Length: 505
Image 1 (tube, helix red, strand yellow):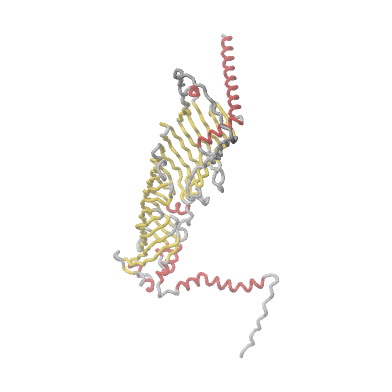
Image 2 (image 1 turned 30 degrees about the vertical axis):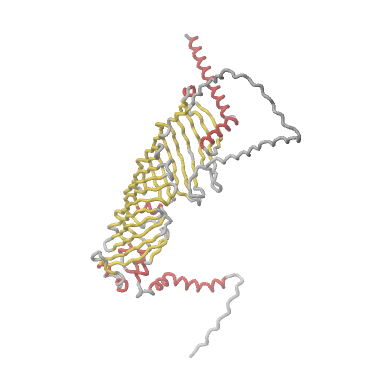
């Protein structure tokens, strides 16, 4: 019995030793310079883009492992590399190596970072292999010069009697060795998309994607994104959705995310194989904190508070970002506007406390989207005694063209100065009088003629008085300090003393 045990242990030791030797041999083979260059060249040819590999290894538990993968940029002036990944792992079914179909159980890309910039035409294109140089046209050798007075000899070929027809043996075609991929995973990825000026358009951080193949053209899985940034002004957290890709469309069927401590849900569908890759999107949101959204976008803290809810339905194509069309609505619940500079100035000027801290009973915007412009169909902000409304357009470039109206009820109108009160005219809304004004400029730097329309002709000098109160004193002080500053400079000559006037009786 002991002898049998020794034989079994010896056999196991030989098997393990043989496996180790085979593994070492395989690693030495795949890590050789020639093999690594062939694998790198074949992957580059298959992907249609240059690919670099730092190291290749094989282990029983991880399969084929590629480390230090990079895809360089092909457009000049763009850096860093288009793709850099820590590890690419390929796990195969060992028994399939001896069959006609190679079964790849898992393809995993670990820690990739993708840096994707628009080209000169404003489109996102994958890096491509440089075109191979065209071979020179073959030039036939010149004919030998003929010697004058000679006739070229014609070689006679003896005729042979026709023989039996030749029998051509047809060899069977070799079996096609086709791979089957069962699962594709992306772990801890980071995607960054830039425009032509190298400014960030969208950033996706900590992306995880797990999928399975039903057929060669049918991919199903689930994607999770820890943080999404759009133009560094709008942020989403904890986005996740089922994903399906086939020859007809790419579908994120149940998108769930959070923004401004609120909930966002929707769907995104794109047809990547169709011309210009058209897409549709539906989004619903609720309980989004307006103050949080404005602060993240670079606005002042505490200007607008309340909860946002609404929806958006849009369609477009990825080839032209200005070709977006759709419609939507935004509603602000329990809204309040505080410390907004224009309203605070008006409230102080007109002695209206409500303007300085505006509590909104109604706040909503209805709009539709045409290529290149958002049209405001209805914008209404209503408090107890004041109503502010507007219609107009907001361009995709941020330019504003709004026709606005400030309306007050009779109670508020009676508190105004007479010269200001006369500029408010009765409107169709019973009990309200209104003043029209325009808003121009851009979203980041809006301009309005509300103050001019509010003051009117009778108070045309009031603006200069306000300017003098706010800035005139500084100008006088600056002028008074200029001679003193000049005298304090090194080497400056002292001004001649001014004779004092003689005392008069």
